[in-house]
Each structure stands twice: as structure tokens, then as C-alpha cells.
View: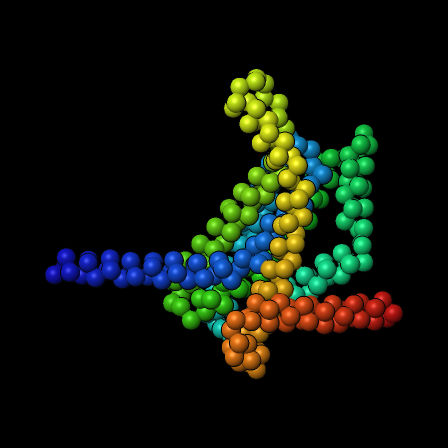
Amino acid sequence: MATPSLLALLDDITTMLDDVSVMSQLAAKKTAGVLGDDLALNAQQVTGIAAKRELPVVWAVARGSLLNKLILVPAALLISAFLPWLITPLLMLGGAFLCFEGFEKVWHKLRHDKHSDTSEQAIHAAMQQPETDLVALEQEKIKGAVRTDFILSAEIIVIALGVVADAAITQRILVLSLIAVVMTLGVYGLVALIVKMDDIGLWLMQRSGYHLLASAARKTGWGMVQTVPYLMRLLSIVGTAAMFLVGGGILAHGTPPLHALIEQSPQWTLLWNALIGILAGAICFVLIHIAMIFRKKH
């Protein structure tokens, strides 16, 4: 009797793990837009740090990200267990925030906002001053990156929670935990690679010798050094576009009339999601700036 029971238990575990794998893949696809933005933002956050301190800073931010998720995952599970009706409003709020953030980036770009350039120049200028406390500067950048990660991690967890909202509690725990760990390792592993690409490229360019491998290494290194600025720009563009698509998709799915309209023309789903995302971002942008102006006057 023990053997059939054991086999039945193993079959149940296998089925559950298979379901977890499927749901994790679906959740990963849903959170891809936030992941692209998370990657671009965190890669930009650690620029301006001395080369020998880049990896320790990335590791410090990664630890902060794991701590963020240790807070967010249990909070999300508690919400799903005791306040499941709150999941959809949270998803809609997260979708609206994604659209707002994407529109804000586009608006600043269209206005040729130089704030980010000025900020980066200020960091480099500060590093040239002998009295500058580089440890304090580094800690400030780490804190800023961890704060940014908290917002983006919250979006990732809420979106993933929406995928597994109707699953068993064990599956919810496994999927959210898996998403949290994989996303953290994936994002900060890639961030570490991106911030060190120029150093790796320079190291390859310095390879001596005239044989074929040395020549190929030098060319590869030169290509890596030249690629880094374009890669950062591409990540920013892709991340912004994904924010409109993912945010617009969340808002459309959570609004029955819009969802029904989009289902009538599934071949235009991406276009609809993008248009809804841009429109929602513009509305949020206007409302938030009106509120800020009103607050300043009072």
C-alpha cells in the first residue's frame, strides 16, 4: 500500500512543479517590460563609480533588491490570501504607473531635458574634487538604486501575482519566490556584465601578439567598447516601449469594455496596448503635474 501512495504523491508533486513552471514562464513574460526598464535604470544608476568599485556597488544594490523582495513577496501573498479583491486594483495602479513613467521619459526626451546629463556631469565633477567623500557618494547612489528597485520590484511581484491569483497557495509561494530570485539574479548579473563591458573590451584590446586569436581579441574588445553607449540607449528605448505595452495591456485587460473591443481584433492587440498605454500615461502625467502645481500654490 505504501508504494502506490508514494507514487501518487510523486505524481502530485510532478504535476504541481509542472504547473509552477508554466505559470512562472507566463509571469516572466508578463513582467518582461518592467524587467527591461529595471535593467536599463539600474545600469544607469551605477555609472560614475570608479571602475574598481563597480562590481561591489552592483552587489550591494543586488542585496538591497533581495531584501526588497523579502518584504514584497510575503506582503503579496498575504494580500492574495486575505484581500484577493485588492489584486486587480493594485495591478491597475501598477499598470498606470508604468504608463506614466514611460510617458514622462518620452516627454523629457522630446523637451531635450538635460537633467540626467547635468546630474552625470555633476557626479564626475565631484569625483575630481579631493575633498569629496567618495564613500558617501557611493552610498547615496546605492540608496537611490535600491529605492528605484523597490518600485520596479513591487510592479514585478504584483504583475506575477495577477498571473497566479487563482492558483493554490503553495503554487503562489513557489512562483513568486522563483520570479523574485530569477529576476534579481538575471537583472543584476546583466547589470554587472554591462558596466564591465568597457573594461573587458579594453583588456581585450591590450592583448599583444600578431597571431589570429590576438587580432580577433583586439577587434572584439574594440567592438565591445564602441557598443556600450548604444546598448545603454537601446535598453532605454526598449524598456520605455515595453512599459507602454505592458502597462497598456494591464489596463486594457482590467477594463471589460476595452478588453472586449481588443478581443474583436486580436491581430492589433500590441497596437491597442501601446495606444492605451500612451493615452493613460499622458492622462496620469497631466493629472500628477496639475496636483503638484496645486500643492505648490497651497
